[in-house]
Image (cartoon, rainbow, N blue to C red; front, side, top):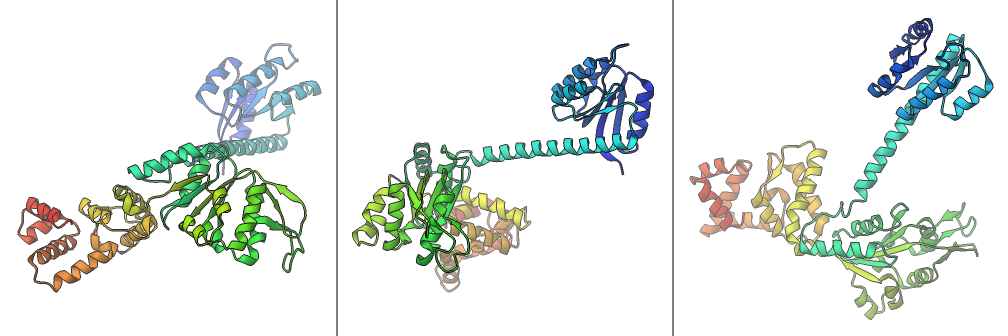
Length: 456
């Protein structure tokens, strides 16, 4: 099977051109030949060649190779990744060295050995392919970094409450101040920490997340500060602690309010001194880290009850950013819900799913005690369990929705019965308002007015 590659041969000897084309066309898909350097500019402008096989001499009686070096540079200027193989009847070492310095891949003397020439071109093509792949990966990396470093690309919302958070991130990111992020579980504290890191001067260095609540007291020092081999039982090798691993980057200590008092003292010492000593070692390691902490606890209250050190709170709380719960940024619920819906429609291969406005209205009036995390899980569950194209309020398994439906069946209150009938008809017809209105004996306008009345 032929290798897909573009090869250009430039030689003023038509016999050489014919011989090389016959040889190379057996192995490669696109082999072209030109016998004059005047054709080179056009050929390079119209094509991106993987390999150029180039003669060194084009002037009668000239054996200096200057022409070849000139056209070699022209090829390199057109496409630096093109691999160039030079041919000459005069195997002068000085010329070969100069050609290599200018970027030639290899240098062969006429008459050539077919096997050697084919092997050289094969290697040159593999090198060219590898260079293209690296260039492509670097481009992808650059694009991804631009996307990742876009301001707040992972924090979704348009409310005034979240805009205030964006403003705080912008102000604090370029400083070296320690930041404390507070808020209920599920509000997105880690996303804010990552946004600060990405907007900081340390963006190209490591961001290390440590869940303080998941570290046992016995392993605290080893996990955070590291240890030397033999420092204790089971210390079979040196270990780098989280502080050292995050050096020059950002260290994010999540759930810091769960840290017991004895460990708070050890943490405070490291933060104050900006030095860490591994367990079983006496050598101090200088630290240069940006510290960001987060908690769902009320640390000032814990200070009052002496469950949290006041001096540690001062150290970690140069700037405090509070994340509001979802119930205080209800206008963000539709855009968040749509974001998660797009993710799970693709994941579970249900591209036609959608949420009607009246369903969004219902979601906005729910308290969401688990905040964004609860909303995300609710959307995922609804997508999995849905049968039709439109997600209904009942698909989200909200407690107040279920209770209302039960009460409606067991009650003779006319408003509750009408509300239940409307909800049932809409669900039966998978959100098709026209069909639901027809079954209820109403016009579309009358049904919409009742849906607004009952906040559906």
